[in-house]
Amino acid sequence: MKPFTMVLLFGALVSFQASAQTAKPPDVAAATSEAARTSGPFLNGRAWLSWDDGMRLGFVIGIAELHMIANENLPIVWFKGKPANGEVMKGLQDFYQEPANARIAILEAISVVAMKFNGESSKNIDDATAILRERYAVK
Image 1 (spheres, rainbow, N blue to C red):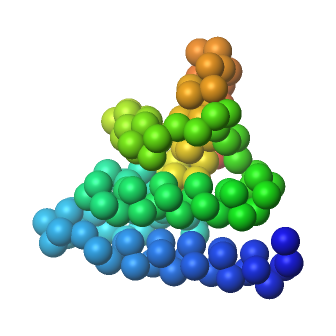
Image 2: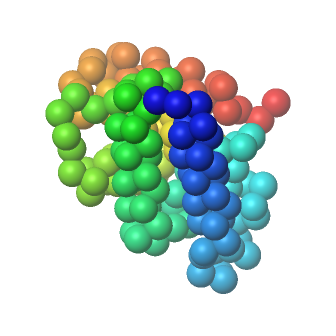
């Protein structure tokens, strides 16, 4: 893939993330500050939980398409087989029900969901989750 194409795709993802941050019901937007919905430059579990299903579906489809276009060279664990978008959404929803996971970037949480889908052991999933919690802990 040409570098220019990757820049365009990443730019589209960043643009989607920026618009996603503003497309919330007023009560959720007031309760969750923009700073709380991001971890560094990435959207996190607080953003995920504040979105409606349409926003979540758009995000999941966008990441799946980016993964395909990037020839599976994104630095995240991906799914063996082809889960339904709803399965990925449910996995992320379940992952973010644990408050300790709220600051973990969605892009990395997808890796944990994929590990579960792919049949990884509970120990490996717990270890990966612990690493991500440490990475995104407030310091």
